[in-house]
Image (cartoon, rainbow over all chains, first blue to last red; front, side, top):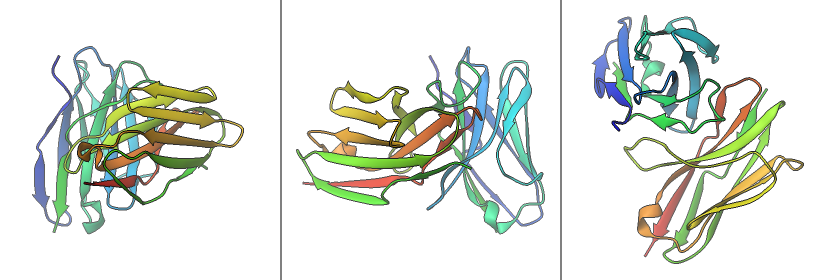
Length: 115
Length: 109
């Protein structure tokens, strides 16, 4: 069974631009969660999608948004990029909604650098 | 709110035993998970404890005390490949998985 895939793996943008990251979950998984990882901050929960609906959201500004498609693939978008958005963005898939009670399967992440 | 505390770094030698502690503050607690992440890699699931006690999976064991809001990950017979970051994470009735800041384990020969 193929794992979670994320594209692109690396991205360099400049301040003010916007970016879209993509995540394909494991086949059969309907929940996709997104996390931001920065040194010293661990993994910060961004949001979780299940059956094309955002079911949960972390404490991030509205510049961070996402969506999920009928095939469970998910995208996250960051608009008006700031230097502080430089991070590794990880997505994770699981069978059921409610991240934590189910094992989360993580993708390799997208390394975003904002210049 | 929710918060977790774990040591930032732990060092040990091959063959030794190391314990990584995690204390948490959260309401509506469901369980405590542990994830391993090698440098440049994705986090991978190690264990999940919802009930008090010790759960063993090979060389790794995880413990939870709900009354003390405390858990730990025990790694035995350490190998060089165990050098990685280890994250505890709590799940609760917020349905969010909240991670600690991670403990970097360095195993020396």
